[in-house]
Structure formats: C-alpha cells, structure tokens
Length: 232
Length: 232
Image (cartoon, rainbow over all chains, first blue to last red; front, side):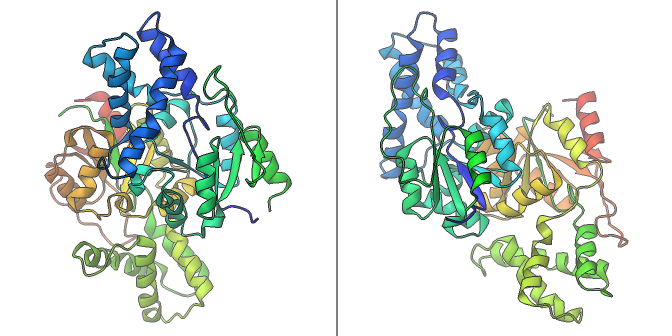
C-alpha cells in the first residue's frame, strides 16, 4: 500500500448521523410519530430509488427529488398528511444533518496532510449546505451529480482519481458501508472501514469480515492516528 | 433587484493575482526572463485554447492540459527549454496563485450571509488545490469541468442556478471581466464588477461602461458593505 494523495469520504452515516438528525426533525414536526422508524423507512427507500436511476428506468434524478418521492410515499404509512410547505422543509432536513462527534476534529487533522473530499450520492447543493451547517472542512465536494453516476457505479470511484489526475490506488475511500468499500476496491482504490454502530439508531448494524479492507478504524481520529503511525 | 441566494465568483484575476504569482514563479525558475511578459503571454493563450473546445475543434480538455500546451509553445519564444519535470512543476503554478489582499477577508464576510461558490474555467483539482493553498473559504467549488462547458457558454452560468435549484436571478456573478458579466447578464444572473487594476501588471486594463452591471465594487469588502447597505 502507498500513501494516498486524496481521501474520499462517503457522507450519509459515515460523516453525519442521518438517523438521529432526521428522527429529531420528524418528531419536532409531527408530535407522537415514531421518529426512529420514520427515519429508517425514509432511508430504506433510498437504494431502490437510486437503483431505478442506475438501471435506466429513471433519467438522472437528484437525491433531493428522490428523497421527496420517498417522503410522499411514506407519510401516509405513518398516518401523516403534511401541507406542501412543511414537506419541502422536512425534505431539506437532509441538508441539516449533524456530524458524528469526532467528524470535524478528525477531518481537520486529516486535512492538514491530505486532500479530503466527499464522494457521496447526495447532490451538490445538499452537500454544500450540509458542510456550511456542520462546518465540515472539505477541500472539494464531489458528488454523483458531477459524474452523473450513483455509487456503486465504477464511474463514481474512478471519477475521483480522474479529477485529481492520479492512479486509482492513490485514492482512499472511507465509509461505514461494506458494499461501498467493496465497489471502490474493485476499481483499485484503497479502502478504510469506519465503525458507526449507531447509524440505524437502536437497530443493530451487521458487520462481516473487515480484514479485506486496508484500514479498520474506530473513527476519523483513529484513522488519522493509523495513517501517521504507518503511512504505507 | 432581489437579494441573491448564491454569489458565484470568477477566480483568475477576480479572486487571485495570476499575473504576480506566475511572474514570480517564472522568474525564480528561469533567471533573467521577462516574467511579466511571460505571464501575460501564457494567459493570452488561454482564451483561444478554450475557444477551440467551445467550438468543438477540440474535445473536452481541462485547463491544466490547455495551460501545458500553451507553455510548451511559448517557452521557445522566451528562449527557454525546460526539462519535463520542471515544465510539470511550472504548469502547476496555476494551482498556487496568491489571493488579492482583500479576498480572504471579503469572502469570509460574504460567506456569513450568502452561499459563496466559484464559477471558473479552471478545473476542479486546480481550484481545490488553490483554495487549500490560499485558504479560500468556498462553500462549493463549481467549475466548467462540472458543466462540461466553458464560460461564456450559457450552460456554465445557468448550471449554478440549476445546482441550487433557484431561478437565475437569485445568482450573482462577481468578476473583473466585462465579457464574463455580460454573458451572465444575458442568462438572467445578477452581476457585480470588481476592480482589479493590476490584473495584467503594469499593462493598463481597459474599463468601459460599468453602469450596466448591478454593482460596481472596489473589492470584496466593498461589495459586502454594499450588499449590507442596500440588500435589494
């Protein structure tokens, strides 16, 4: 392994706590709702919706619009009927997700020695608003929107290397999702798994064999320490 | 006029002093060269090179590669023959441009009330490296590379509005180039001219009728003050 030139971060779940943030906003807007179940239901609609785009059943569609379609579908399932203005506000809760406690400090440490970028399926304005809200110190915000391909399409992972004009193995993907890291590994990227056991709230998160990834880190501060201790 | 939601900045000349920075690096690498003339010659090759891409004679090509083509052409004109490694290093001088003295302070003030983004023909890695070097506090780096269209193609200006899902008149372009602002105005954007009289060094900069733009500012601190004094 060689020292990466660029470290790319998955965002939802890896950098920010979507579950806790969505739950909080949902419960504030809809008193009495099961906010944890609502957050997980909203998130569960995300992969199938992206798959429609990836498989060509749906033309290029931003996550903001996919989130809205899913929201409109699940609201009745939770016995809710919000007016348009409130739906628009709630849909943008994905632009206001809180970072995990180590995230800003860890990213700031990593930024001092590496170029740190996002590689998220979130759209550019979502990621920019989130960075402003959560003070995430990205060197560059990259998104599926730039490559017009959602992860795990190879174009997204290889796109980061192309933007920086480096071979794929000079890019490291950091994520708390094994399927994302596997797809990156297939494209020749370095990989680091980060543990976010509370990603789905109380719902347990299944973790399998992490030894196949280059790094296995408790959080971003641990990842920074590992890269300082054994850079290669 | 209404308050903009997003302020987009041209970068070369508007935010950073390409002339002084390129001159300094050229003179350090090639003692005795006329660094000011060299910087202006390099920059003069930029618009014709982009025009080849805009008119389809050349496929999509990043500014890094256009800069390199121009560099290889002008070096002999200045009696220079640099080895490959030095050419690569000098070409990346465009990633290390110094900001104008007011730029970081002015951008930081504007960032507290607006979303501030780049809209530059520079490629993404160039703009990311420059932001890291010069500590430019962008909320989002947008580039012709994202839209696959160089300014003044309308797709570049309208692309900013599309990314943020706002009408074009909620975006303001800030530039020290009248042709850039004119093209933005044609697309319905708000416009602000910023004076950078030393953009070409000692070579005078011609300024015509600025009253046709929405704002005429001495620098970014003045622009911020104007937007606070009369936001609409």
